[in-house]
Amino acid sequence: MTDVTRLTSVGQIALHVTDIEDAERFYRDVLVLRHLYTFGQLSFFDCGGTRLYLQAVPADKWTPGSIVYFMVGDVRAAHARLAAEGLRFDAAPQLIHRHEDGTEEWMAFFCDPAGNMLALMSQFGRADSGV
Image (cartoon, rainbow, N blue to C red; front, side, top):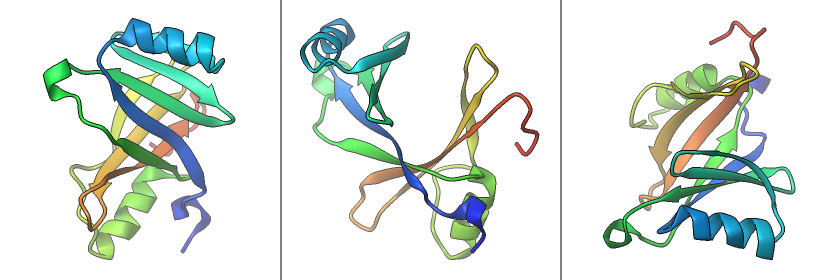
């Protein structure tokens, strides 16, 4: 196994909320987490180096649970290695977001044997050309 395919840390945890403004106030003002940015109905916070991702969903679609996003050095290489071992992904790695500084976020989603959603996640700067 190469270093760029090794899961190195949890990069992000996602939670569904029903009201993004209320959730932002709670996580920012009550829990005193550092707000990183908001993008539509998505809000991101820093929680000791792990990113907390809040997504607003309609109340009738809300379910408890979270998605664990594992950081890898190269999402494409990790996807290829795990797919070769028989892991089924929802799709090939995809560009999810491009930040103002040019950093790109790439992700690939899959489920564990119990059906829990998991993801591989990589960030590439403008100078990176591997993706």
